[in-house]
Image (cartoon, rainbow, N blue to C red; front, side):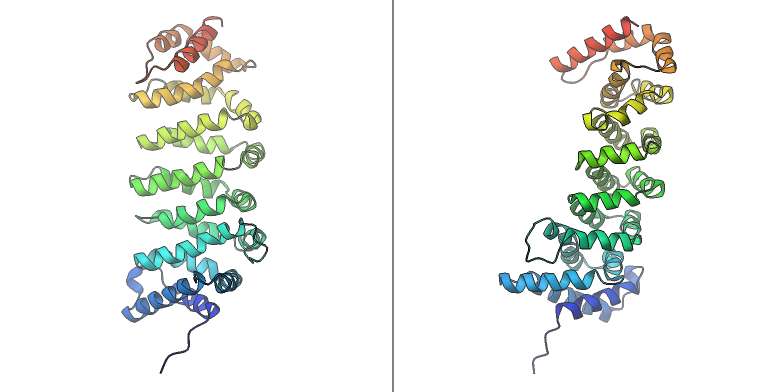
Amino acid sequence: MNRKRSSVSDLVVAIAKMLSGHTEQASFKEADAEALKVSISQLKSQVTSPNPQLQRAHYNEFTRVIMTDNTLVDIVGGLAWLDFDSRKSLISLVAGLAHRASSGDPADDADPALLVNYILSHQDLLDVLLDGYKLPQPFHVTTILCEYIKVYSIAETILLFCAKEQFQRIFSAMSSPNFDVSSDASVVLKDLLTKHEQLTATFLDQNPQFFTWFCTLLHSSNYATRRFSLNLLSTLLLNRANFNAMSRFVESDENLKLIMRLLKDDSAVIRFEAFHVFKVFVANPRKTEPVLKILKRNKDKLIEHLLSFTTETNSSDFEEEKGFIVDSISEL
């Protein structure tokens, strides 16, 4: 006799209930693990039905149920403990909430406001996601967050809750010796700060302390972290939308000292990335007295260092920029 097929609602609730009771993979009994695997397979089959009408109906049902109570939080919190195929299937469905929300299809219930309101009322969702960076393979965190960040209103909500503690958790993950963890966290930070220019500009204006937090990455012993952070820093400073934040950053003599130290780094790549931040200090027409004093005091050494400064390509653009910076320092 054929068993009655479970509904999408029943499957989502059952999966969330099974996942919420576990904090590590070893705590799953073999029967529970198999039941989860079957339920997730059935859920994916229904939500990705080849029949367009059924697929839409099932996805709308999935959206409504998963954003009820702590269901989404419970499912996200248990993703790491699933087998590879089950985890991949659930990640696709959870990340797809944002993708469907941004599609603009009026027949979809995946309105961005639903996910925004859920995050607003379940602030622990971001913490649960960031907890994934404590794991050796946190790709589920990156996949979900990067999809959510693509939608302006969702990215705005995530930034709203990214206080010092959350950013420090991202920064800590970026400095991890585990390459997967470090690179995944770096991707999330870059997307969060570059996908929506005006949103980032507003965030930086409202959080002037952000660069103080961010500059801790430039002290990292992890080469890849220092390189990535310098590159992202120059990208943010050179973006016209961030003019106010850039102006505050180059007013600081402590920031200048840090960048000048990186100009002497053993790595040519680090020196090159530091140059693109250093030039912002030099080109600033409204230098503060402490910044001007440091540049004047180190004038000869800086010119000598920059004249011997080379890159692998020595492009004409770089040589032109270097010449401008040398001339500007000479005229101080």
